[in-house]
Length: 257
Image 1 (cartoon, rainbow, N blue to C red):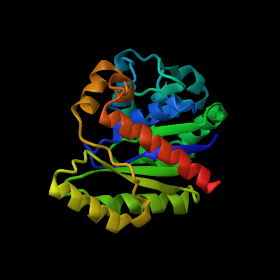
Image 2 (image 1 turned 45 degrees about the vertical axis):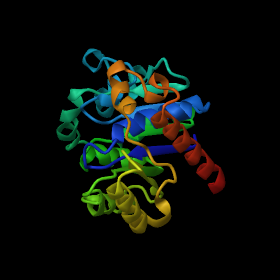
Image 3 (image 1 turned 90 degrees about the vertical axis):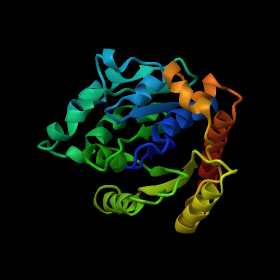
């Protein structure tokens, strides 16, 4: 097991699920064994790798309530070295049902401990909120990736997110780190995008990934075909960017060893 990485930002529409799906698929394509974990009740990560979220007999919701169901819930995808722990709308009720359970913040960690030796990387798509489900994800993660859309209000809400990361680090997971900040939907032709990129770099310094994810139609189209973009549009600039991101993460990992 090399690393568990949560993709998180409570702000919607920043490319969080697109990043989770395509980073996981890219790592798989680079011969890493990957588990993609859908923790968003919308289940877009699940459908993004070809599964009908309405027909799941066992999902992450059941796993949170009974950790021994983890092997039953995990599904093999048709993509190289990539498994998925799927989700659907039932997960929306998990926050209430977990509230009265003992060690409610670590239920996901207990389940993942059963299978984590099978994988090199576990990539978690967190919901766009900072509640108990996200707490479960961050409590077991080694690091977080924060996708930020290159728009005027890019940094809005990030202080709250960083405060949550610090709280999890202090209370549940002292080893939690920021893997990096990922600029998404970037268009180098737009002056505003360049200004936002500079502002984010000023704010996060060395934590900003060198790889930027461009705004492309193919990245938006791919989920409707149940495929990561790196398979749907193999040689497109969005796909190349996610492969480059995966290589950057692997390179950083080797450097840190």
